[in-house]
Amino acid sequence: MPSPNARPGDIIGCRQPPFHSTVSIQKIRRINSILLLLRLLSFCFTLASSIFVSTSTSWLDSDSFRLVFAANAIVAVYSLFQTSASVHEIVRESTLLPELLQLWFDFAHDQVLGYLMVAAEAAGMGEAVRKRREIDTCTVDNNFCIQVYIAVALGFVGFIFLAISTVVSAFRLAFFLLSGSRFPHVY
Amino acid sequence: MPSPNARPGDIIGCRQPPFHSTVSIQKIRRINSILLLLRLLSFCFTLASSIFVSTSTSWLDSDSFRLVFAANAIVAVYSLFQTSASVHEIVRESTLLPELLQLWFDFAHDQVLGYLMVAAEAAGMGEAVRKRREIDTCTVDNNFCIQVYIAVALGFVGFIFLAISTVVSAFRLAFFLLSGSRFPHVY
Image 1 (cartoon, rainbow over the protein chains, first blue to last red):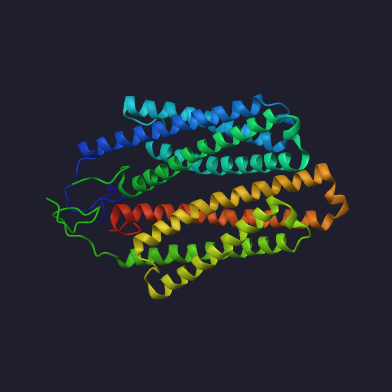
Image 2 (tube, rainbow over the protein chains, first blue to last red; image 1 turned 180 degrees about the horizontal axis):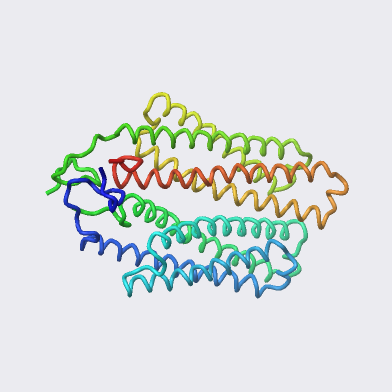
């Protein structure tokens, strides 16, 4: 009969290793540093993208470019929050929210905002290509077109870093659900 | 010193439970049935979406509608393949590819095709809204607009099922990497 305090992954009748061994603390630190870097890169690229699109002329006239701005701004704010959360975790060695909630929060937001970003970039790219082909906006105002292309490209790079973070968050959450720790113990 | 045959999650010096206990076989079967249902639903909706968009007039003139067709057709073919793979797994009780490769294959394709789907639906929706507002296509040929809206909506529902499959695949893969089995053992 399992004890009421047993966590998933506990082996009944066996001595459990310490909750966080030295090796897993090192691993957690390494993964946290990688995530911090990914969040920071994602923040820089999405911020740059939203600035680029919002300083271009007549971006407010187009739903798609407004979506590009909104998605990039949302992800920039989110990435900044996650960057601070990562720094907090590295310095204080504890998560901002309770650990399980934090892991679900990270994974769910990464996944949903990833879909939002790719949708926005696709809509923006579609609009930019159409403007070039059909309306000849680019012959009239070439700077506008270049700015929009750069904004979409920057946003796409930001999305790539977010997508990598998503995979890391998914694995962290799954490992935590299974073993009560974010990383497999090393024996 | 761990034995060279030790899998991640093995506890040295403890009797290991059987590789697949009766309870975990039941769990694997239940999750396989859920995945089969998700794949089948995803197949139906993406197939319907690609048929809807391809039978509408003048869809070939628009890059965005071509993208909607292509993404839905690709995901329909992929979902059909995954449906057969699920049936094979349920009937034969073994995966089509070697287990780890199969789990990576499922997760990677689910994730990437999810992004493709949401990008295509966003581009298609942007184009449909623009056609209604700017060009008055819908007053000339209202059937075309209705068909495109239905196609995008069907594709979006297909994407939702694919996104749920992605989460299941990610967890299955992470559990397998950690414990050598797709689901936590139940003691």
